[in-house]
Length: 260
Image (cartoon, rainbow, N blue to C red; front, top):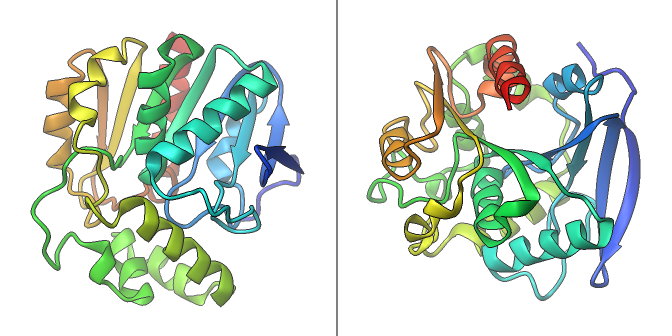
């Protein structure tokens, strides 16, 4: 099933870096921050939110058709780029949904300017120290095909992702940027855990029970550091519940945002 063509595509420039931005809807701003795969297309679940929220889906610097600036060396650089963009846009009271790498980015933004954000939703989020490196949970040791296989639990999604057309240059660009942001230390900021007390806004944590990229055991550490957060886990689901358990995830996120 294809996404209805309700999102418009624009290019925005901040600090001499142009990024792609898909946008649709009306109401309070809702920012979706993607993970390692970029935004090959707008995630279908976001269509449900366009009646009540102004949904913004940027493609990070270094990914896809966005510019690949020389200054992008670490997650701090990416966080300050987005804060500059939000300041230039005058956007306040923003809800943020961050998936994987995007969840880490969401936390980095909100610890710096918590007053700007109305809520955070962290989906299979990176950012906190993962288990010791090993083949089982180390995306940097997987081939592209292995990464797809380990992203999803349901083989139907695996086969669809493997069969989908893809641009090898874009995939290489995305992978290079992910390596710059998360290779060392692996997929986390060693100081982040000491700063999460600044996230006083409502937080929803969503995780797949069969996540092989970042295991569901990570939830315990998030709960320890963010005791006010709500938690939803999804059975028979890998790293991306917004795709693999779309209906359940969308229901939970709608309830959370409406309660906020």
